Image 1 (cartoon, rainbow, N blue to C red):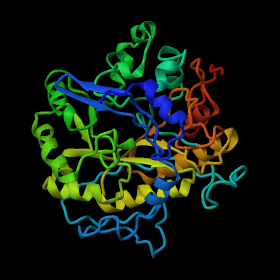
Image 2 (cartoon, helix red, strand yellow):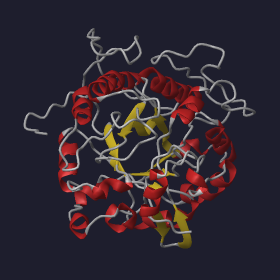
Image 3 (cartoon, one colour):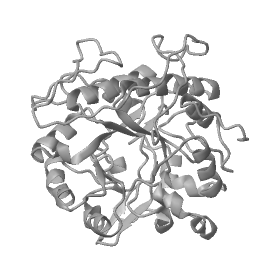
Image 4 (cartoon, one colour):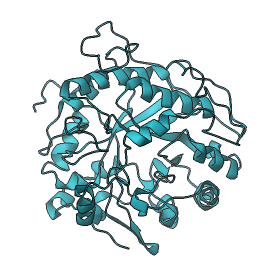
Length: 400
């Protein structure tokens, strides 16, 4: 069933409570299949999902004999002391150098964890990245002004929830002028995604003809918005993705499926079914939506404690139904969280959601809790200023 972006807007305007997710795309189609991918998909998860992610404990990998850094009954680990115990399936790890510095300034941090303080420092090249949702094309400054502003503040790559570039995706609703402005540099900055199993054959062709540096395999296969997006079971996914894993890809690094709940059972079942394929992945992807910095860090450290492998946070935002951040406290949230993530040493990239101006409600969050990095005309927001400043980037010529 083909569902348009207009229909998606109607659903969202109707206030459906079936799912708190953020729309990424309208209709996804693949040249290798006639299956219509009706993808009313708003990633990022409301308070119910946040609560689920915080209830990780002993049930997260039930029946798999996989170690957990902590259980529901025990205290959470500190953000700098994740367990390195390996799981029962083969795991490999890598960790980068720690960076970021602390600060004794605790002004404006009443809404964040008392144990964390705002800081600024420097980030490795490629650390800061963003997400473009399907409404990116509705912004007058997209793509040229938006891209230039993001780049000026240190944003490197972006995820757009497609395998093809955005000018080939009608779901992004770009005008002819906007599509013509998509430069080679902009397209090269994209991290493409094999959204589900119907994209695999197209991805095989991509690896043969135009291999990207990175390729993410599946977006939230453990969750379906309004029962319209595809879900994928772990064992069949291991079988389906074997085609890609076995395809020669000397110039491409694979990123694991990005799950709604990366600390739930899906990933462990997948790695067991694929018989050690964890070594075929450069990093494990994680989606985190939480307005509490310590809650974000707890999810990250639990994931690393289970798999001892490099992490990409391919969606990061505080926007949830429980978010009470405003422009000022959003900046404090960013300046508090980013240096703490850097200190961990094993998070290679973060992708802030979102890079475009977003006037729609995100995860039932109040309008004040807007994570947009740019305004409609492409100028920067205080959130982008804070994100750049957390990495020591303060463009002197930028104007809002």
